[in-house]
Amino acid sequence: MLDPVRPLTDSARAWAEQAQQRLRHRGPDGRQRVTLMNGRCLLGHVRLAIIDLEGGAQPISNEDGTVWVVCNGEIYNYVELREKLIVQGHHFSTHSDTEVLVHLFEERGTGLLDDLEGMYAFAIVDTRKEQLFLARDRFGEKPLYWASIHEGRGLAFASELKALLPVENLDRSLDVAAVAQFLTLGYIPAPRTHLKGVSKLRAGEGIVFGPGSERHTFRYWQPEFVHLNGHRRLSQREAVEAVRQRFREAVRLRLRSDVPVGAFLSGGIDSTLVVSTVRELLPNSSLTTFCASFDDEQLNEAPYAKLVAQRVGSDHHEVRFSSAELLNIFDALIEHYDEPFADASMFPTFAVCRAARGHCKVMLSGDGGDECFAGYRPYFSYSSWHSIRRFPGIHFAANLLLHSWDTRWRGTGLLNFLHKNDWQLLYPEAERASTLACFRPEHQACALAGLEELKDAAIQHARLRYPLSAMEDMANGYLPEQILVKVDRASMFSGVECRTPFLDRGLFALAATLPLNYHVARGQGKALLRRCLPDWVPPEVRWRRKQGFTPPLDTWFRTSLRTQMEEAIGDISRRLRNVILPGRVADLYQQHQAGVDRSPMLFRWMVLSRTLTQSRSAHA
Image (cartoon, rainbow, N blue to C red; front, side, top):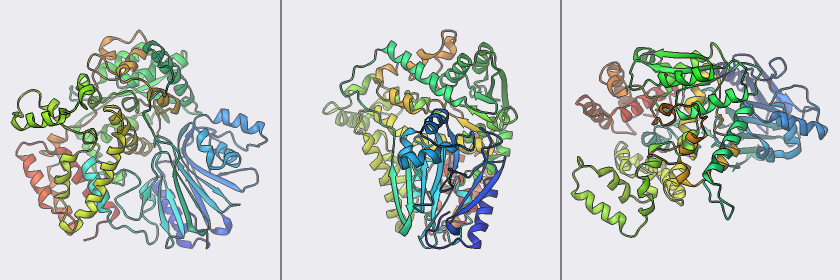
């Protein structure tokens, strides 16, 4: 927290105590606070000790105490950075990765972001310039929320929204535009949250806040899929070897730890590549792996994971749980996410993280492989038709056919694909009217503004040919705002740090320049990654189709969650009666009970109800 003008009050110090208490799950190994700038700045930290267990407590300063830092996450290339800084004359008081930030800041200022390989959200205070510098990592693995305080003079920040809720005079009014985005996507993209008074940094974004209450926000990086611009294209064989080498280096950096490191192993392409690479790098070390095992055999990936675990010789754990066990943590986990967040795979994700915590503090995961290497079905569905989508008259002809085509006939999906413009493949235009219809007329303009932001982003990514546009769209939206949010909150709730080798800057830069046909083969995506797997990987693993990780919401809303859903409808009717038309939600529920699967939208409404109860943000 920083107020450039006046010393912080007792209420600010009380807030800092509450914030540390609310975030204790993220840092169960210690907590510290420091007051700077004659009482006008306060930095606090809760620590999950991973590197330099004895000496790495934060906040950390430079040699003369003029620059201070708190950081959530890891700087993977800290060893190389530290060596260069020592040569340049800097003196270190710890062996932690975090300390490189203050010395690198002295050398490079905000330009230090160009040198970092890691997952991080950090705050650096320069007491000489009386400035606060906040930054979030490139892909958005670690979160950072902030709010204006003291009538806009100051700024408070935290790793999770729950820590900012006790801030004095925080604007907790509902952001209608953000709610419309949530109902469309199942999450709220940065910089919005559902509260008008709280914002979040986007992935690859920084803020400099200083004297005169000036706030400068800048984007220093974002994922882009680019052309080679005249450089020689790698052959497929060269591409496979280049990806193997870069991925090996990414895993090597992410194995740096002073506590045990394990790995999630689903038996899919991504996690198998992670685990096999760890074994290649550490052939004689113990390796612990974890896999979710479901009662529902259609969801169960355990047999494939077991095949891989046996081959690499890991100490393998199957975390078997039932729907009843997931339901036991249903309400608590929804509330833990603070914002409206409707990815039901957060429940099994948390269950596996909780089990892993009994053995390892750090886990490697395969997240990011789908986004960087074309793993999602829309990327490769109708792949043979991609080249003709922009032919003159194709959209018109497909649209004419659709009007006379029976939806039960084969080919409906292809016609839907062909009749849409490039940006319409990325933006759910068909859902726009139904989303707006949920809001009362006086709030539809605000809701529409939120939807227009989504449309503008889709149009920007649609400068690329599909499906590269979809890959870039996913890497900028779905990946940081849903996948990585899910993993960060579930893992940190369990006191586990989750590291993702696929989200390596060099690996992404390589993947983003490869031809699409390198990624698609046999009607499947991730063809290049499948070729990167060792020869010993059996065909039933190498050529597996992507499998979901989602519990049976459809059934739950007709059985176990029926009462909770009915309560949520009543709660929404009370809290949002001046904002939405509750009858729309009730209609969805009745349709679901009649046999039409409306579980995705019902889950969003239930999550919204729980979130509003927690933050008390809805204004009747």
